[in-house]
Image 1 (cartoon, rainbow, N blue to C red):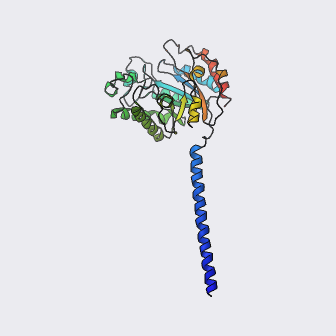
Image 2 (image 1 turned 60 degrees about the vertical axis):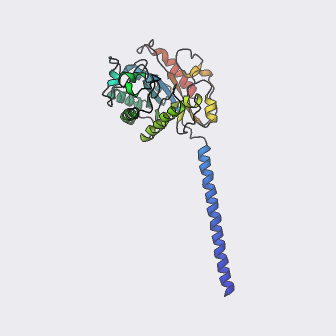
Image 3 (image 1 turned 60 degrees about the horizontal axis):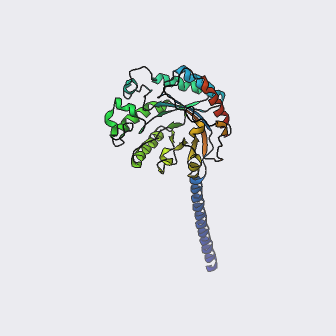
Amino acid sequence: MMYVNLQVEMNNNNKHIVNIIIMILLFIITIFLLIFNLTSPPDKIIYKGFMLDCARQFFPLVSIKKILIEMNKSNYTHFHWDLSNNERFSFKSEFDNGKLALSLNDSKYYTKDDLIDIIQYAKKLNISVLTEFAFMGHVKIWNNVYPEIMNSNYSDEFNMNNENVYKYLNDLFSEVLPLTTSKYTHMSNDEISQPDSEIIKSLDFALIQADNHYKTPIIWDDSITQNDIDVDKEFIIQAWHNNVTNDLIKKKYKVLVSEMDYWYIGGLHDMEIKDFVFPKSDYILGAELVWFTNSSDDPLDIDWVFPYIKNAGDKMSEL
């Protein structure tokens, strides 16, 4: 009888040891998977974009639709609509009763119905729309209506310690982001002169806004390449400075390629886009052709841009 009891006890002990071993193995596997997920490349997503700056130069809807048609011919996936800068706030928003858009005393702005019109038109062409409103930097136009929220040392930048900055931007994003069809939203953040601590406030706010509206945020590369800030990996980084794409990849950022000598239209950026070589990396999610306009551009004479759109589309097909 003692022998039988001893056997039963040994069997129970063995089972207990086996259970402990199984739990340890499961724990090790869980830790491995967590580490793998944190360090492995993101799922490959091909973003083929075109950015149109409608702040420095205002484009009528008919011109924007012509551009969308050309984008569709080359299988573009995203239209990046830049709606504000130092020169102009091109959207007649409800949060300020249109004051920013009307502050230049002209009719060069888009209404909410205009946004919906372009967004729906693009959708029929299988193109998603994301918007960009300059914030923290390139916001000189806000002086016309809200001088009290501006930085006293930098006339084209917000004072990120003024709570009304966050209130106004929250109201703006709450109005616009639910209308857009892209899973992404562009949160700007480029060429900022203030200390890193202030830029970080802007980035934290951008991340919250994107999360609130179930969007993935995109920012220009400045915070990393110019300020060496440890930016949250949830951001997609648009590489516009030359020769920064590889460095961003090494830091395991998801990258949207727009290096200016190749991917910017006009000005001194005249390198042939066909000569650009994409680094081989799953961290490159796509590329974007960029048109930062100027006062000399004719918003009705746009046919000359179409070859750029085609050539960039052909290059992006390599991704």
